[in-house]
Image (cartoon, rainbow, N blue to C red):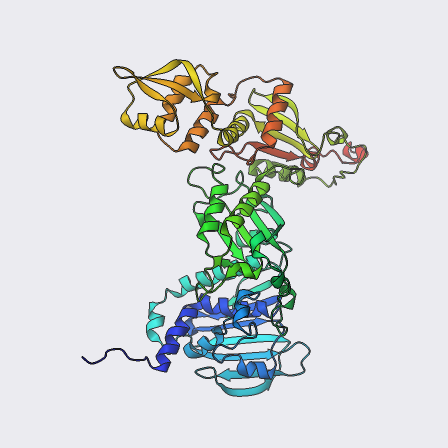
Length: 584
């Protein structure tokens, strides 16, 4: 029988290989922009002409000299690694040397570049396979301009299989947003068909940048945490201390391996903002957004029982960790990775999210976050020309400032429902039932205790599913007659309640253990309409402040409303000059 296996022609091999790296407009933009970032660029301009299948990326990075330009598009050429050992200490976004070469297989490629400090700029056009076909001197500022024309011109089937131009532009926008979140100091200008499409201004932190990408989210809706954490104990060696990347790289500052990693976390506070889909649970590692289902699930678990049903958090996690912890060789687009010591990083992420959601001295004083209240204050401010001076010794905030900055002081109870609490920065209204519900729920999660009850609680006409559910959460239940069952132990918080039988029936209707804990906490919490004395209110506030997720109840409802002292002072115009305020 004749052999049917044969080697593919070289041009077909190149097309297939290039297709693994370049498969859309967004992938071209991603590859070129990552090269710009590796070159140290702080300003990047992306121009798109989708109907002409043309893309241009210009940057102010370190640029390339003539020798580098002549090698840039040849197969597997890169300035970022030198040997196989370098694959385990990747500090750059690109390293495989495939992107530009793949572009020469799928499109026409032209690069203009001038190195920083260089007197001449050069323009080079490349032919198929990355060979130089034209070289000339050109006038250009330090940096690089890459133009890709007639993308997929030699592969019409690829063009036909791509989404519509509008969908491709949406993917480009999403790609740039992801990269911008990882590099908030970059200035971005994006043009489409010679008209400015959108811009992204640089910001000091990712949290300050996010409202440009999600306009419906305000700065006050976010909490940002930056932590320095040690690398896993069994992953750090003395050899790693001495590792440095290629000295010719433009990112030498990144190449020094440290025994510490950094964790940058931006979360939308659950009492203020959330999403219908888990589309803003995102993870980035060393400057690139990646798909890591394990870490994404860790984030979702950390927000469990803080959001309303079928709502998802806004969370952007950026880990900058030692390169020897990562294996980028999982996917040609480098969107999936292997991460060592995954359990260690999951623990660190959970702790960071708990810190972001807690109430501490650093975030006790908060901006007004209720739209109706903020509009009311703005309406009052529009008519007054006055300034609030928090350092004014005569200010009537002196009494408030005597309160410990790390605590809330119970002042009064409104409608036997809301606790008025003061602190150094203003006042809060705390809804007593759901604050107590949060306290009890976390206590139950930490210590789910079932206690014996005598005489047993008798229930009537339970279905097999109800019986199974009660046994699933640990209750001892046995037949006590025809259609009667005796419950001999119950959750500890229920033993003092008169409606214990009704509570157990509620638990029998389904759900996991956490659902049962929520139901017990809700049933056991102090009811609205219940009067509380000063000490009871203060005890509840103290216990609530120290919960892990004090912003919402287990059902996702906000627990408190904050009013800053400065906002109150502006609303009541307390800092007007007395003579002028009397019309003198």
